Amino acid sequence: MLAIHKGHGVKIVVPIEHDKRVLSRLQLFRNVNLGEPAIEDLLGHCTYREIQNGEPLLSTDKENHYLYVVVRGRCAIILGQDEEVPLTTVDPGECVGEMSIIDSRVPSAEVSATELTRVLEIEKDILWRMVSASHEIARNLLYIMSERVRYSNLVIADTMEMQRKYQRYATIDALTGLHNRGWLDDMFSREIKRTERDRLPLCLIMIDVDSFKKFNDDYGHLAGDRALVKVGEGIRAPLRPNDLVARFGGEEFSVLLPETALEHALVVAERLREHVAGINMGSLGDVSLPGVTVSIGVAEFKPGFELETMITAADVAMYHAKRGGRNCVKAASDA
View 1 (tube, rainbow, N blue to C red):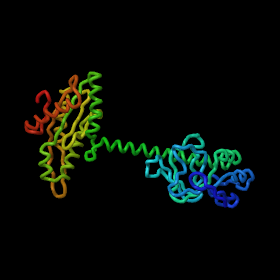
View 2: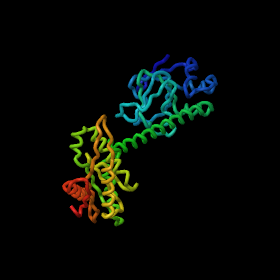
View 3: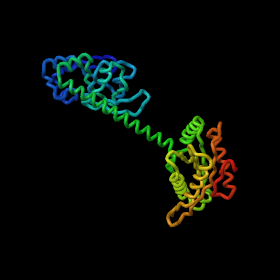
View 4: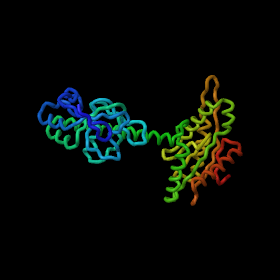
């Protein structure tokens, strides 16, 4: 056995005929007649390479001209140099480097050994000559590439699904299932701009649960959470599909009514108030929970208004509803 130091790792030249049994178990050489003279000759131009634990095999900042087949050990595929968690591993029999050979670009990921690893190193031109000499090798290489693409597609699909979940978590209130304040700021602002552009009516409703602190103190936070969930459901149920509803924060909720004038918005607000007042809170353990009421303020969009302007106007109206005895609706023009 002849060892030649060449760059990272150690290249070890081993007579190929001694390893035909091992080679036949590798993906690239499955069902290949390794005793065929043309294949035997090409294998004679291939070398083995020992890779130490943690040593890089492929790098995203260096061109690659080899297909590496893992014979023993294991490598990890990492998307970037700063990443710590491997995307996947390359086990004995599997290959790396084929994609960068095909598209003649630098590798798209870092590949390093995770333990002492031996790879069969096949130079690019030798690989193409093998493909020309053997239909089985061509078919195996195509299978290897298709599996790599399939896995990449699964990773992309999983990533997109995870992004959708994160996006949902970022815009949904975990307790009530309604949209949250972040979503409200974005979507309500867009709707206000559309309203101003198209000269359409628009109203904002602010809703606050009456005496919620006392409800929490008397029946506990679990009961308070249930009340907020029930109120959220009660607010959502009577609204149109294009009405926008969100939990503003704490025990406060917001509803934006597109293409709705103040007169009709007050009717909707009164309907919401009645609907919430009629909700059965059920019981918690052995304790029957009382119903809750809400105070509601309504503000109508006027030229030049921004979201914060409408929120302030509806908040002031809601404050007057509180002072007016709670469980009622007030318009900003009446406040």
